[in-house]
Every structure is written in C-alpha cells, then in structure tokens.
View 1 (cartoon, protein in one colour):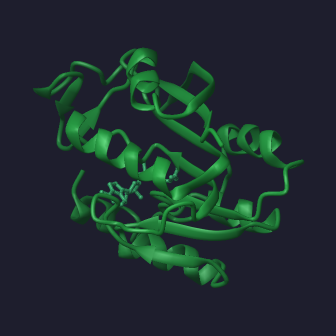
View 2 (cartoon, rainbow, N blue to C red):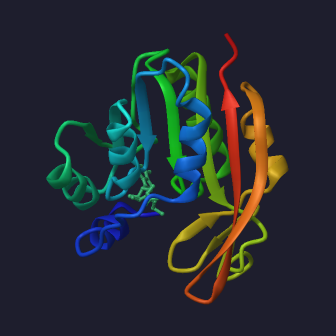
Length: 201
Ligand SMILES: C[S@@+](CC[C@H](N)C(=O)[O-])C[C@H]1O[C@@H](n2cnc3c(N)ncnc32)[C@H](O)[C@@H]1O
C-alpha cells in the first residue's frame, strides 16, 4: 500500500484505543524479562505507547510521517523510525519482541518472505513475535482486481493470509499459536489470522 495513502490517512485521524490483540500479546510476555520491542507499522502509535507504558524500550517504525508525528506528539520517548519496512535495517538479535498489527498484509509473496526473514534476524533468540493480518475469510477478499495469489487491488493492494500461509512464512520460528479471529467494522465482517511465535535459541 502506498506511502502517500498512509501519509494522508493519518493526517486527520488517530486511533487511541488499544485492541484485544495488544492485550493478548502483552499477557504472554509480561512475566518475561523482556526490555526491547519493535513495532512494525505503528500507524498513529497507540500500541507502541501501550507497550511503552508497560516499561518496554520501544522502536516504532512506519513510513507514514503523519502517523509518526501523531504518536510523537503524545509520547516523544520512543525511538521513531520513519522508514519503509522493505528497506529497513537493524542489527541482528536487536529486539526481545516484534509486534506487527495489520501492517504485513500489503506485499507480494517474495517481499513478504524477505520481510519475515528480516524480522527473524532482528529478533533475539528466545524472543517473541506477534503478527495479525487480514485473512482469506475477510469480506473484502476477492473484491477488486486480482494482482497475485490471494492479493486484490481495491484502491490499494491487500494480501490476504490463510493459516497455512502464515505458518509457511513463520517456518524459521517455533510457532506457539496461529488462529482465526473476526470482528465487524462498519457493517462488514473483518477476518484475521493472528500468530505468536518464538525465535528458537
Ligand atoms: C492498517 S494500518 C495499522 C496501523 C497500526 N498498527 C494500528 O493497528 O493502528 C497499516 C500501517 O502500516 C504502515 N505501512 C504500510 N506499508 C508500510 C511499509 N512498506 N513500510 C512501513 N510501514 C508501512 C502504514 O503506514 C500504516 O500505518
């Protein structure tokens, strides 16, 4: 999805409420001695700020300048990285936790694989990764122009994940859980695949 779309989207909009995925993720790590967390695609930053309040040292990445500006105005004590995840570079074994809420379902298969490989490299051994993407059961699936396997362009490109696809992309990790969830937004059914995995020590 284009940088311009997300630049414009976050100019007049912010999300304040933290979603259940964030709470469920935190519940799994709160008793571990984790300190560093990378959020990929932080948007207007509500989840990064939530993890910051729990005591984490946060790196929040998004290519949207306006999204990052919104979050920075609320909490400046976060390492904001205005970068495209496709080009982003961090040292190996940099983070105890990586968290990506609805930010990894925009790329073709090759790019998705490259991104998951990078995330694996950046995570410390024993570290946790949390990912939520739109699923092939979503009501938007199949709408617009087909531009790849499970990919449709309806104004912007979305890559819908199945449980099997998520598992394949996480094959370097030890998978703890992959599950489907759904909720209703603006009268249409949104369906998701949520994953929790660990980088094996
Ligand atoms: C659906 S929003 C989710 C934002 C936030 N995680 C949330 O739940 O509110 C997707 C986010 O991914 C970001 N994004 C999309 N493609 C990106 C890319 N190639 N590099 C960095 N960020 C990207 C967008 O700017 C946007 O903020």
